[in-house]
Length: 144
Image (tube, rainbow, N blue to C red; front, top):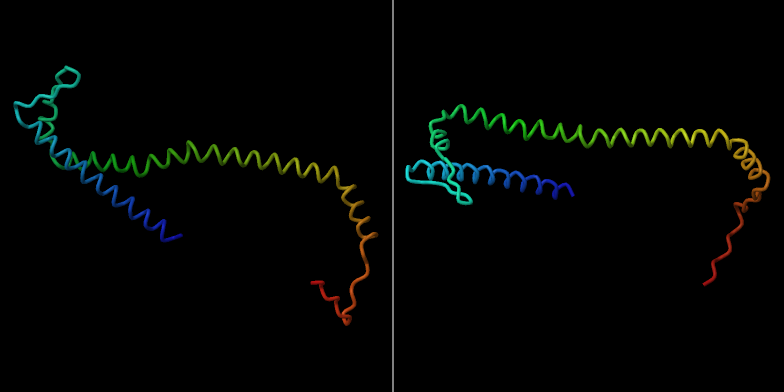
């Protein structure tokens, strides 16, 4: 079972790397496509100004790397913490509260019914089978 999880982890890392490479290639292709002056983008009949993409070509590489680092930290660190605190913590608190209520009810029940439990124990001790089979006597063979 450990190998299955290991293979899933490797496959997930490969898919993430492929997504990163394809996103970079798509970004570079879109950037190269938008750099031509006669290119226009039209969606539902409305022309979209792609001058911003043309201006983005002059962005220094360290600003892009800083933005990618911040985005990576948000996805890899902040998002799991938010999910743990928004989903895991309420579930944990609910289970702890329900467990405390169940413990309290069982404790109260055992306290209230303790005389009956002691009486049942005494009756069992009085009426139990006191005879035990002898050590030296052979047991009867089972029927076929």
